[in-house]
Image (tube, rainbow, N blue to C red; front, top):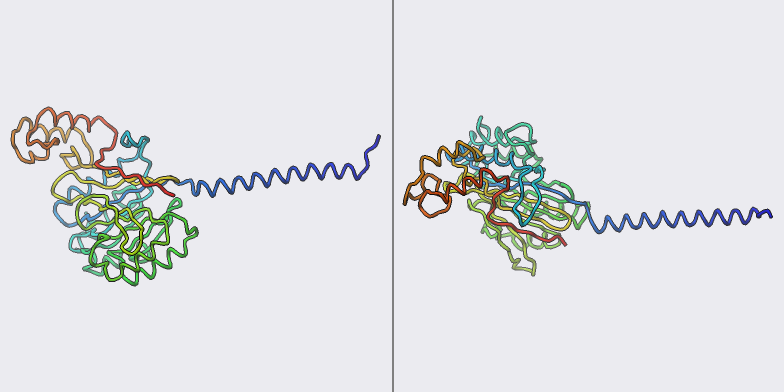
Length: 352
C-alpha cells in the first residue's frame, strides 16, 4: 500500500522537528554550562613590591628574586593545596621600583627596566610585567613618562583569563577614580572578578579625601583582592568598608630588599571557584642570595656550623634558636631536596 505524499511529509517533518528540538536542547545546555562555569579560569600570576633599585641590598636580592620567580613553574604547591605551579601569566609590581626615583634605578644597566623588562623576553624575568608608581617613583617625571610609554597611562587595566586587573598608580586620586568608574562600567561582563593594585595601603591617609567615592565605585563589582606595598612586609587583612557592609581582602606585599630574611612574594592562582594566594618564602635557606638552594648555600652554612648564641648567625640559624646545629642542617637539606614551595600563609577566597 502506497503512502500518500502528505504522510511522507508529515513523517519527515516530525523527524525534522525532533532534530531541531535536540539541537535547541544542546544549545541551551551549552549556554547554561557557560553561565555556570564562566570563563573556565586557570590564571596564575605573581605579585611583588618595593624593589628599590639603586639601593645597595637590592643589588643582590632583586636578581635573586627574579631567579626564584623564573624557577617557580612546576614546583609543588603546599600539600594542603596540591598540584603544581603553572607558568605565571604576568607579574604585578605595586610601586617603588626605583629607590628615591633615581635614573640609575630605572634606566641603569642593573636597574628595573634591564632586569624586569616588559614582555618576558627583554629582561632577566621570563614573564610580562605590569607596574605602578610608588611614592619614590613619583619624585621624577621620567618614570611616569616611561610607564605611560609602556602601558598607555600611569593607571590602566587589562583582562587576563576572565579576570579584570586594574593598576591605580601610587594611590587612586579623584582623576583616577573617575577613570576607574568608567573602566569598570565598560567591562564586557559586569560580573567579571576584579583584582586591584596600587602602592599605598588601603588605610593610608592619602586615600581619605576620596575614600567614600572609592568605596562606592568598587562596591558595585566583584572585587577579589587589593594588593599594595609601601610598608616592606607581607600580610593579609580584611578591610571593612566604613560606608557599607562590604569586606575586602587586602594583601600587603613584601620587598626583596628588606635586610632581615625571609622575603616573600605572592603566588596567585584563580579558577572559576576560588582565588588562592600563597605567601611564598622564596629566600629561606638561600644564603648565597641567588634565588636557589645548592652547594653555594651549603658553603656559607658550613662557615657558621656549630656556632652558639651567634645572633643572626649569618642567616644560617633557620630555626631561630640562636645556634647553628643539626636542626638547621635538616632544614637546609629539606629545602635543597624538596621541590615544594615554602609558604608562611595561604589564603583561599571563594568566587561566588
